[in-house]
Image (cartoon, rainbow, N blue to C red):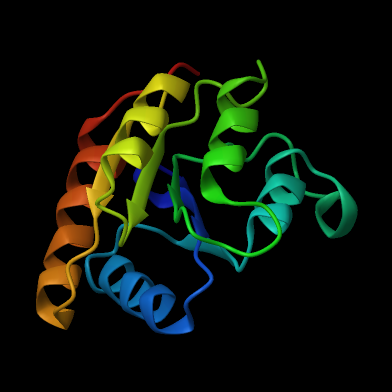
Length: 147
């Protein structure tokens, strides 16, 4: 199996509509054979740190990318980002904020915490598909992370 075939993504998105459009774009462009969708920040942390329902997740299957919304129930995206970038086990995993928030304080705080990219989701369906396609091209095919 090549690296391309082993691509795994964590999609952290509470909106079923936005999640479905993101998943559709990723599948359309064959960017991932395993996209894990979680619906809130607490579930994202369990997934990343192999706790709770994800305690048995295979530690050898590293994620290539985390697509993270900010405005979510239970634990917001900023706190998820803070924990991921603050822990040696997950620090190197690329995290791209993909949110509807264009608030300067969210952008500044995200970069202060070490986000790898910040994308404001377009409202139109086709524009969102294209944006996710561009994210996939760079983060899944061109970008390299430490082994």
